[in-house]
Image 1: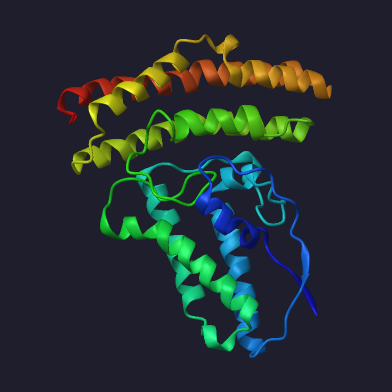
Image 2: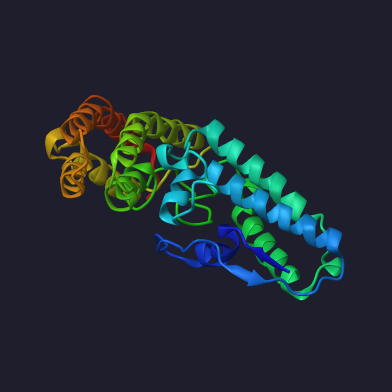
Length: 287
């Protein structure tokens, strides 16, 4: 018998270890399934792994783009961004905790050796990602290209102020009109994502999790540098224009006009709101 392993199985350990964006992964590869000690347990694990793959890409849609997940495994992910709000963070953790519980509930001794390794790897990586959120209420457990915890929602090297522009300019494909529409949909959602991350940071600061002053300074410098560039000159617009022209996408001018308006009217003001808040907490930040 042969079965197809969902994409996340082949990515999980690598994602946990990677310091940055993972390269696009191939389609799931057909592999020979070993003999199993308990066919019911094997089917249960396979279903749990499929559910984990689906839940992960539903909760972290940007990861689907980074990892080249097919539409069947990540439906609608290409037009969505990660929800960085406090509610989004709680919902993501709760959904993945439930999947982790399902994986753990499968008796390992009823599985063949290959599936035992798969179960152990997935449980280890997910448990490590979720463990900090069981202890503290601040920070975030899942980045768009990895499975790890970060203590602050916005930093100079991570968070949507950095991750999302990188995703859109370097990873999001716009070789046709469908890709362009998804790009515009993501840009339209971006201000709310930024505001959600700001709300998460505000809530974390209220809990006492204030970034050190030097991190605030570096983060604010990145945010201000972005906000200082006029919408027409933003890479989110210029890169989009260039790639649409290269692909000869019909209606490119209209797509670019939408993108420029969204960046100027929504994205840049959201960056400025973040900068203003960082300035207010700077005096109380630890050194």
